[in-house]
Image 1 (cartoon, rainbow, N blue to C red):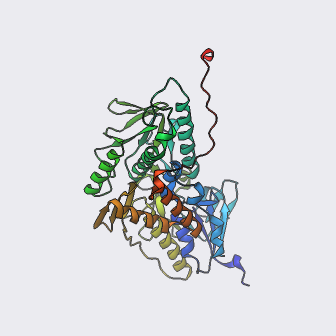
Image 2 (cartoon, rainbow, N blue to C red):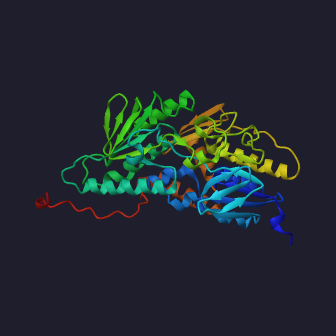
Length: 425
């Protein structure tokens, strides 16, 4: 058996779309790979809002990273957090102060929520960029629903405000509306009227700005049909514990504010002394090598590419795969190739039998066909047959006939809510 330690060492940071694609691209290369991620699992972020709204279990959208070794024994998975980088010495420092040497480094550590310096946003709004954040939204929603139902002096429902009219904001608002309309109205007879209201706050005059105009109009119409309020125009000036204040002075009452707009690199990237491009992302060339560093690649949301690719799954998958292939080419004594991104399209779901799909930037679809297309693409994009099967079952139960008429949301622990006695003031 050959000495594995003599093989070139490739360190891949990040177990998301780009990181896993880079690892898989190196499956047949004569290298040893270390995959570093702060979590032990990969998260399928496009479906996190389904977890946040009680439609899927968190295990449906997560994948055990060490399972990669079943088909790829040349990868080692390290559950740690990258905090330092010494490019000259070709080594990285982890949170536990361990240093790891590399021959080639692929940075695919993604991004995190960006609050744009909005006062109160980080303190009072709920982000949705990780599994734990999605679960926190879900559990907080039901805790506050129970509190509303057990408060005799309150006869109106919960007020939910979603900040951001992009794909994430529209999808979470649509899923909340489905949850409310199909199951929570009869479940909470103590609440007079709706169990909760849903409002989207979007700076500008339209939602889903990256889609064709016809699709934007369709999405807005479908949201309004589901009684989702659209507050378009002014942006958010401040987030309060019980309201959202807009730049024009309007105050929208809110019992639960979900922040679904804006991402930025993690804070530790500032200390890595790498060239930065737009929005603080790491600047890379056409072959995804970091500018000025021949042995460091960056892919996915963290990379600022010359083509200004969107921060979506497909650019991350294609970029990660190319980064891995380019490393393999350099190990073999060859040259790197430039990224030729194939835009396969984007899509978003508003609710049952209501979705939009923009394919190859040429054709667009709405309604039931777009919904089926969305379902197929998302199911097939999941890693692992178990995840595909359980997610498909969960989505069919949530949206499919006749199951959608009697939905049973997935909930966590909710503490007992006891109304105060009159003498308790």
